[in-house]
Each structure stands twice: as C-alpha cells, then as structure tokens.
Amino acid sequence: MKKIIQIVLISIMFGYSSIAQTNGEPGNGENGPNPLKNVYFGEEHMHTRNSFDAFTVGVSATWDDAYRFAMGEEIELSTTGEKLKRRTPYDFVTITDHSEYFGVLKDLVNPESPLSKTDLAKQLAKGKTDPDAAKAAVSMLIGSLVSNSPLEQFVTPELLLSNWTKFVAVADKYNKPGEFTTLYGFEWTSIPDGRNMHRNVFFRETPPVVPFSSFNSIEPEDLWTYLEIQRNQGIQCFAIPHNSNVSNGWMFSDRKFQGKVGTDGGKIDARYARRQQENEPLFEMFQTKGGSEAHPLLSPNDEFADFEQFPNLINLGVPAKITSGAFARQGLVVGMRIEDEVGYNPYKMGIVAGADVHSGYQGNEEFDWKGAHGNQDDTIEKRLSPVPNASGDKGYAVSSAGTTAVWATENTREGIFDAMKSKETYGTSGTLIRLRFFGGWDYDDNLTIDADFVKKAYEAGVPMGQDLKQKPASAEAPTFAVWALKDPESGNLDRVQIIKGWADPVTSYPREKIYEVVWSDDRAIDATTGKLPPVGNTVDVKKASYKNSIGDSQLSAVWTDPDFDPKMKAVYYVRVLEIPTPRWSTYDAVKLGVEPPKDVPASIQERAWSSPIWYSPEKK
Image (cartoon, rainbow, N blue to C red):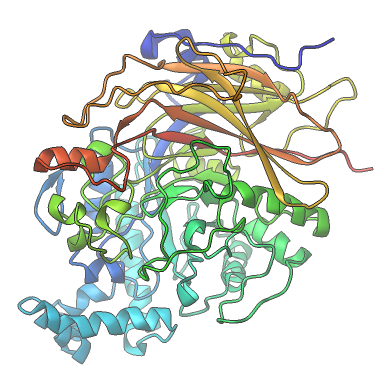
C-alpha cells in the first residue's frame, strides 16, 4: 500500500551554492526570460507626501525618494533628515498613494500654487510655527474622508488629471526592464464607520486616465465596475484588499458589503462572487498594521497564530471585531463555502504582503525600522512611547513592513503583473525567504532533490495559487512539494508547515489543521501533545543580537495529506518560520539604553506565507 506520508528532508548548511538552491531556482542569474521563473522581491503598498494623510504628519518624501530607496540608494527620512539605505535592494515597487486628494496637499503650502491662497491652505501654513493652528484643517480633511464629503475645490478633475500624469511620468522614469520595475498603482480608501475596506489597484503596462477614489464611491462593487471599464478599454488591472484584521469582520464575510452604516446587502450571490473573483486575485496578508492570517481566538491550536496582532480599528483606538470574516485562514474556507452555494469563490486569493508605510520608504528590514507615520513615530523615543499615535495604537504596536515575492519569467511590468495575476506569489513579514510550493497527485518522494525538480513539478502538477488538476482514479491523496531557502541577512529556518482548511460538513464552520512537514535540528513531534518542540531562542535581548547556531539554511519535503477526503473541498498553504530574531522594538530599546516594551515580544519568528493550492471534487 502506498505510504500516506512521504517526507524528504533537505537541511544542508552549505548556503547558496548548494544543490537545493539550484534546484529551487534553476536559471537564476542567466540573461533573458526564465521559463522556470525567478523570484523577485518588492513592495506593493506604500505612501509618499502625495497621500493626504502622509502629508498631514509632516512627510515630504517624493516619488523619486521612494524609488531611489528601493533601488538601494541613500535617501533622508523626510521628517528628521536621518540617512536611510536598504541593505538589500528591491526588484520592483508600486507606490500606492491614496486617490482621495491625490497629490493635492503639498500644493497647499507651495507659494507658487493658486491652492496656497485658499483658507484651508492658510490654516495649514500656520502649523509651521503653531502646530495647534493646523489641527482644525487636518481634522477637516480627515473628516471629509470618513464622512465621504470631499472639499470640492481640491478634488476637481483637472487637479486629479494633472497630479496623476506627473506620477505616471516619474514611474516611467525609474522603470528599467530587466533591472527594476515600477508598476502604476493607487489606493482606494473606503473606510465607512471605521470598517477598513481599502484596496490597492494595479495596472500592467498602460495606466488609466485617472484613479478612482472613495469620493466616487465607497462601495467595492463600484470599484469593480471601474476596473471592468478599464479592462474593456484594453487596460489590464486588478485590486488587492488589505487589513481584514481591522475590517470588523467584513473583508471575508458571506454578506455583501454596504458602505452605508447600518445597512446589509444580503447574502453574497453569484454575480457578486464572480465579480470579486475576477477583480481581486490577491490578498495582502501582512503589513505595518499587523497580520491578517489568523488569530489565537479563532485558531486556538496554533501556537504561532498570535503574531503581530493589531487590535484596534484604524485611527479610532476601538477594538476590531474578531470573526471568521476578519482573517484570511477562515476567509479561504468561507470562500469555498460560498462557491458551493453560488458557483464562484469570491475569496480565491493568492497571498502578498506590504508596508503601508506613510513615510516614503519601504521599511521591511527589522533591524532598521524608522516608523510608519511621519512625525508621529520618526524617532526612537516616539516609537517606544506608550501613548497612542495617529495609527490608533501605541507606536510600538505597529509592525515593520512585509514583503511581496513573485515567481516571474522576467523583471518587467508585464512579467511582475502577470505573475501577480496568476497568484504565483507569496508574502513575508519582511524577510526575503525563497519559497516554492507545488501540488500534484504522484510526486516522487525525492522530487525536491532531483536536478529537474522545478521542471518536473510544473509538468506533473501546479504551482502555488492554482487548483489541483483532476484527481486520477488511482490516486489516494494529493502530494505537495515544498522548498524554502533562508534570507542570507536573517535567521535560519525553524520549520515548514502546511495549513489545511475545509468547511465542517455539519456546521459549515471553517475547520483547520496544521501539519509539521519538515523541520530543522534533531527534534521529534511529541507523541502526547502532537506538537513539535520549539527550535530554541538565541536572542540576547540586552544586545539585540542572535546567533544562527540553530535552525537550517534550507528545508524541503514532499508531503501527502494523511487525512484526505476526496468528497470534500480543501485549501492548502505553506507557512515557513525562521528561528527567533530581535523585534524592531528591541533594536530600538538597545539603541536608547532602555528595556524593551513589556506588552510586545522582545523576539519574533519572521515568516513567509505561500499562496494557496485548492482541491475540489470532480463535478458529477
């Protein structure tokens, strides 16, 4: 009888010259497109002074600054003048300034702009010498967004067209096919009653005439109409939702979202589900306002679920609701349940991660975090203060930025966009782990150490982000091949897990199980608890340092689902954990010579989340 569990462990400590690295990314470094794909790391969510909220917290960083920093050049933190330079440059960046008041506020304090003569501009100008004098102006701007009542003279079509055209020109200036990619994008900022329903919008090689804003509509269905109109005109585009953790349970709800407070659009129907599936192929799993993978109250058997939680609604300081509609793990199952009812899965989404930093830089490097909200957290003292800031929580409650990784044939606008649309992507908490995930029905036990691992995995199965091929009659259960390689600037790898989700056949409530697939060091799963013992912790809190004396540089395995039910839909995704390393707040505390904050961990386990692979029974 065929073995139910097939595991091949590779834990070679030879670094990037090892066979597993070659097997996992064949063709890397060669000229021209790679049909077996390279991994490219980058940013899909960040802000500059052209976002109204960034400008109101003192940010003067430009589009040029953001691109130059991503490419590895030195810039200055705009609010303090502190020098900033990435240790590892990015391959691509999408700047997603808010489409509401896009690029307008900087002109209010520009003496050469007619906008500087307005009453609102005069109030803002007084803030240079008297911060309290500008508060009324800032409150008016924020209030106009929350109430969806724009200040008409600052949202004219002429202003929007002018500023968007300037952005497109700067993006084009820095786009260097094969070297560095700049995608066109913006953020649509719907947040009625504090319920975060924000989406970032992305375009392939052609930008739209102008962005769509929540001043046009706060309803996701209207954003989808905008996207559909663009595609009908030949402009390829899609949207990525984020921060389900602060959506009050709406992001992955089985109900249609209605922006008007107190209204309910009813159960999601086929048209709504189909349109969301077509317009939103990805979800942002992690960013500075916390993780949206899971919550310990919803996943009590997951000892790693309590990771970088951001508990409060944005700007409000009010706890967000914790429901199955608020976190991606449960949301993936809710989507399959909706698909059973209406024929489409609105939450069939791949995974990315980003920054949402409003200070003009990306900020994914834990050891060099400089804050996310301009002058609210641009010094160590501010970041370690227990007083809530503009985010709605304490400065040290925010996380450093996440990172998006895409498997693409080449580093071009077409290559990056197409890879994202196909969902062959994954997100990380900021670390640059390399990760492959394939699903099939008869992968060989030794596939991940085969010289043609990637080629054979594609030929006999599917990559992350796809549906498993139809189950052969002879197959007992799906097999999955996973390969992970550490970030050379971060901690070794602790373990690789596969997380499975399905709907309870009786209650339809989301169910889950976490499988330890492959791990480092000489450990064994405890027969009593069923848990893998912790890898250990080398972090020296007083020095904000760690040692890579535990863990492995790479891990790979071929694994078969031991609990497979061919009659039941299921979703699988990979989570890779590093060994513990210092959290950014610990690095800051050591620099300041104080104890780290007590209500956040001194060390964290950085991680990566793959896009899922779905299984559906054959339709009769």
